[in-house]
Amino acid sequence: MLILTAAAGLAVACGGPATTAAPASTSDSVPGMVPSGGGITSMPGMSMPATTGSAAQAPVSAHAVTIEGFAFAPAAITVKVGTTVTWTNKDQDAHTVTAQDRSFSSTPLNTGATYQFTFTKPGTHAYLCTIHPFMTATVVVTP
Image 1 (cartoon, rainbow, N blue to C red):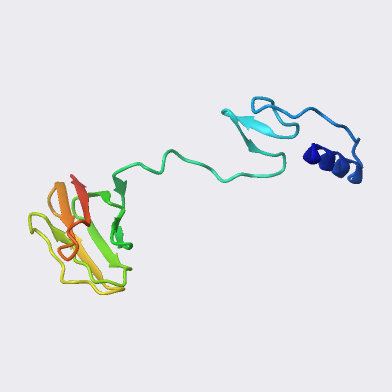
Image 2: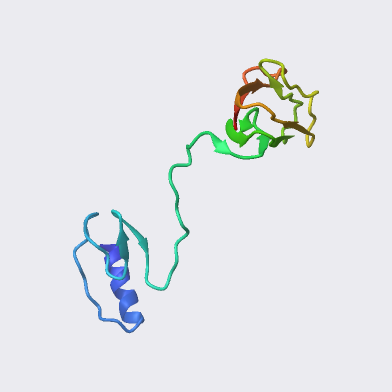
């Protein structure tokens, strides 16, 4: 009730009528708000950032992989044949980028170091850090 009283007081202070309403349920609309798809998304005169689908979509289309927090991010990427992927180590510890089939392999990368590899054959290329073998990821190469 404190919130409703404060809201009524604000309405009076702003020149609006002082009214007290019963609390709205989650299914009720809120005056001045524009509902969309089951939730309130905007107020008149205000814009909201655009939202997209789930962030947990994989694989991601990218040309860069970050090594941070003892993980490759993104853990799965998709690129076209001929694409050069760049890995950058942002950890304090050294890491490698090594294909499980040994088709590509970096030397240990210190903090800030990068490794690049150009993918010339389609397929799924699993890789890991040979220093920390629990760190794994994949590059999917499409024609």
